[in-house]
Image (cartoon, rainbow, N blue to C red):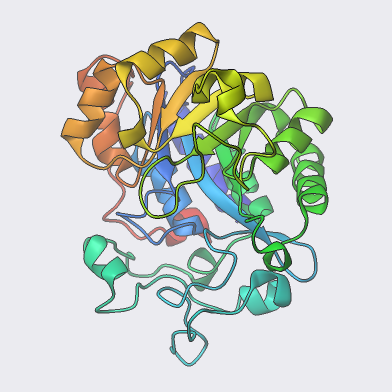
Length: 342
């Protein structure tokens, strides 16, 4: 892994393609899951070599029974993704990561979406190039992703902690979760290249106390069946912070909580809210935007970054609007990632 990551970085640097300073933040959601299997070394590696101009890898972390941070959007093995050695998908709802050892977690293949599922219909173009090693198709550790990203100058990680206050037994408590996460980031000397995000603002409060140099990203969802914030009351997600105490303003609430970045669902933002957030010193990075028209509109109203399953499209729209500068192109998606990821 380390040898090939160095090769990947050297190739980029020889071509003059090291990441520039960030003006507009182009983030690959789960590594760019519309293109390659989500939250895998394959996706992260291909995002780095294929999408020059990418700034940030967005990813999610959980914790195994033996206390290892692993990259997974769910707190469980996903029944639409995880297959055992016999090729069988796990049964719903899937075993909890905290009940499995690292060895058990990494025995599963998460490279192919369950055929016929809604998820498969959502991402029909997701691919695995021939010759990809199994090590690039399993659930990786966060350390493995850091090792990969560390080889590319200034590439950042936006790391989401996966907790739900309503299900405390499904993940470590916030204190232990944050201790494990900060301990690894500090041991890997990666503190200046991460942001930490969460819908569970308790973890963000702990990060601010223990590592104030790391920017915290306050995730929010105001619509749909499962909103995480309300403008009139504190919810289980908001660590006791109530927008009603701050003029009914979510940006003001996040500013009062000590956040540096507000990351709302993209349909929840307006030009007025973005101006308000900027006046408070907050950046606004929206999730998850996959249509070029939406990307262009959000750029026009002033967002500071976008998280997308299609980092290739996002980069192109940002380039067309003059928000990112590219020194060259790499087109490696048709080649086997084996040489880059093994």
